[in-house]
Length: 140
Image (cartoon, rainbow, N blue to C red; front, side):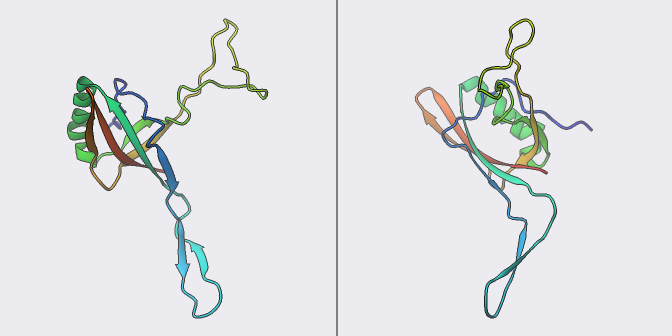
């Protein structure tokens, strides 16, 4: 079975509403006195990401189909382009775009293996667009 891929018809997540945090891999040991102690519970750490998409009516249908049919309401893991890296220009040390011999910019590529977060996506209407807020868990 192949791992599903995030639909290319959907826009990048908006900067507003994008937030990420590592899942805490530590286990806290209670101490009767003094400072608390910690140890690692696992070696690899997932990342929780909150994101928002602003979509047209047809893009909402693509998102709904992906959620309901492709990833079975979040029960199936999927690949998604890393919005913090994928498609951004590769820069030189002085901040200038790195170019191919033809003068085209070199773009970075990265993807995440992820699953839908604990709660189902939320929607709200803004003008003629739908804003979809949801969380994903980026797997290690």
